[in-house]
Image (cartoon, rainbow, N blue to C red):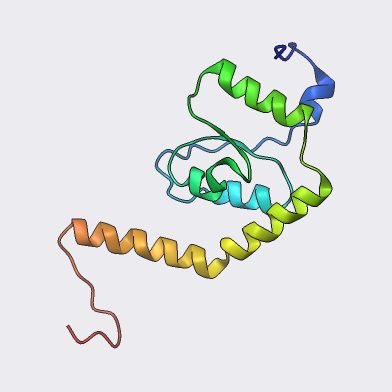
Length: 129
């Protein structure tokens, strides 16, 4: 694919930029928000990103941070953006799969795992241990 030309205002103006460092973030909420708003996503396959993007079905997964691979993925999405119907399908899937209840449960699991690794246990109301 041809490289993006420096200063290509027409191309750059079509991009909605969300930048987040997600290596240590299990569930990058910014990606969920972008998908739910109909914004195409290109992301590195780190942390919880592959799960959120359905293994690449809901957005473009990039497996290395090389400039060429990232640029190719962005160019591909710009050249062939999802149709309105596809964006709506992704939006509905994301809203069903990543509800606030799901997100709260994910955060709860992260805390429980951290406590377990630290050898701690908290007593939850109704817990008989």
